[in-house]
Amino acid sequence: MRLFSSHARATLVLIAAVGIAGACREQSAVPPASTDTKASENALVISRHDDRVFAGGLMPPAERVVNTEAHNPKAAEEGAALFTSMNCDGCHGGGAVGAVGPNLTDGRWRYGGADADIFRSIAEGRPKGMPSFGGALQPAMIWRLVAYIKSLPPPKDAPTEAW
Image (cartoon, rainbow, N blue to C red; front, side):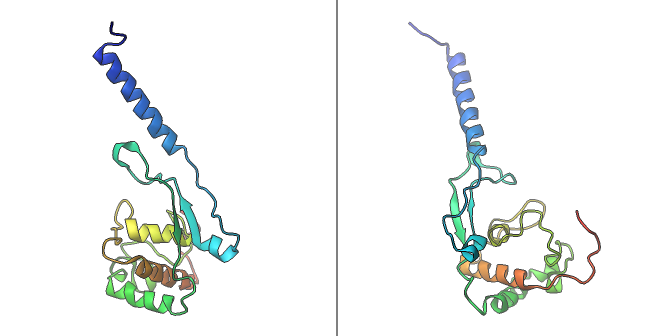
């Protein structure tokens, strides 16, 4: 004896899949396990990605992103050389003050200004213009770019107060 028609079974499978995808999207960020305040500043557990589209609507598992170059005193200097050699200044302007791409010195971050957020923007790219450099740069190189960006002085006169 059949309990459900094939159409009813397909509908139940679809409802279950939507429920699972919705449950995955409801996860929240888990705080870093470290008690070191500097490490907490440079580490972020990622489990929500509102600006991403995932295959099948399922988000990847959470992962810890840790700044491996936080204790490298030359990281910002090496990042400055990378910023030029990777043509980041072609979009973000010399000194990262903005051109076609946004100003990276004014403290306003569309996708977050924490080290891990900036790392993700460079590694994975962002909608509407920021390409992904994760395939072209090793993680340590991206962290050097983050160090350079974070070392830049804020502008003396920002053109606007907020977005």
